[in-house]
Image (tube, rainbow over all chains, first blue to last red; front, side):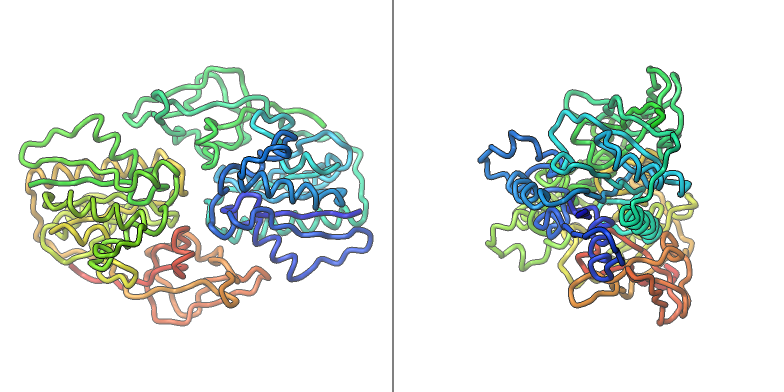
Amino acid sequence: MRVTISGGVHGNELTGIYAVKTLQNSMPLVKNIELDFLLANPKAIKENRRYIDQDLNRSFAQEALQNDSHIYEYERAKVIRQRLQKSDFLIDIHSTTANMGVTLVLSDIDEKSTNLAKILSQEYEDVRILRWLSNEEGDFINSVVPSSMTIEVGPVCQGVLDAAVFERTMKVLRRAIEILDRDEHIQKKLEAFEVNGYKDFPRNKDELAGMIHPEFAGHDYEPLYKGDPIFVTFDGDEKFYDGDTCYPVFINEAAYYEKGIAFCITQKIVI
Amino acid sequence: MRVTISGGVHGNELTGIYAVKTLQNSMPLVKNIELDFLLANPKAIKENRRYIDQDLNRSFAQEALQNDSHIYEYERAKVIRQRLQKSDFLIDIHSTTANMGVTLVLSDIDEKSTNLAKILSQEYEDVRILRWLSNEEGDFINSVVPSSMTIEVGPVCQGVLDAAVFERTMKVLRRAIEILDRDEHIQKKLEAFEVNGYKDFPRNKDELAGMIHPEFAGHDYEPLYKGDPIFVTFDGDEKFYDGDTCYPVFINEAAYYEKGIAFCITQKIVI
């Protein structure tokens, strides 16, 4: 089995980039799998930007493949798609400004990735599973491999390394490689979270009109009830949550301002 | 007296940008001064990047003025220099990923800015004065006005608004405008910090080889002693401080990675 470990799909998420470089410099000992390392968006990494022309992690749809638009990330997506044809499993490392600890994102419901995420989530206290199946904007890099898991770690700023977050990431990543190498299995049912909605910031036309409420900031994965404060406008007006009880994630993720997402709404599920 | 308040000298420091927009939308009542608002780097603000071609806040040297290099920030610097000719005082708002609370940066030793910073520092507990007089890279925007004060607030990620940090910034900013309008004065001597050195990350040739040590992270303005841990390499090796006792600031500031600064070294002074 060939396992690709990728970082730098977003060029300013340093944790994943240096996780890949660190593993490349001191290769984990594996017996049964073949390891492959990918720095996915080298130009964006060099410029310390999320992307050059458009989000690489939304550039893997079939349309993009046929598109001759000179968008740098579409060209990269074609090269990566080719390269990942030989891979059986992908671990893609990202970071977030949200307080999400180590989140294992599953974008498919296949047995291999679910099994891996469940073992890790059971072993580590701050490791949670987030299922994020559909995405209107365009396909993730995960869509071009048979099975995959995304590691999202935070909170950490774009362009910044946080040693504590880095160390937690490496621990989970090394263990993930070991589980795949040993072909370990788990039968148990476990709790997970499933993305089923999005909430935008208050806006005046296109202009941002408010921020995440200080009492809501950092409370990813905690229950949000109708009437809880979620935003405060620049003039100090509070805005309250009006939906059904949910478990928000990606609260105040820097890269989602432009996507019109102040936080993602999830429900608890059992997988 | 004409007072200019600027934000967005760095396009991804949202706190200053929305502070300026908020004041524009609800103008503070002033009797004796004229207020002027400036969003300094509109193209970088639109793209949510620190700068387009090079740091605008290092583009105000005389050489840059004469330079016909088609660098966007040099062109902006010329326009801003022209506009600020009518201003007597500049308050320039920035944010940092470092845990610096509200820091009032003085880049000159004139009476007006020192007086303003001293009143604010005495009134608010988390407001500190940082004197940063020289800068090898090129002149700050402050160099084109007779007197000025920079407000640096943190910790906040690039491209992110933190409501608590925003509110603290607005409180200090509104009070600063009031002090200038009422021409208030203070005689007392006060403690401040003066930048007198820089420390880079561990590197292998040009490649980053380590991060801020988790025990050092977030300890801006606290004493750093010889032998204290400051870095940890990606392999887990600790690196220790080897200089005289100092008070570090800008610890792990995202924008300073590329400048070769892991933190700035300061000494306590009395002003």
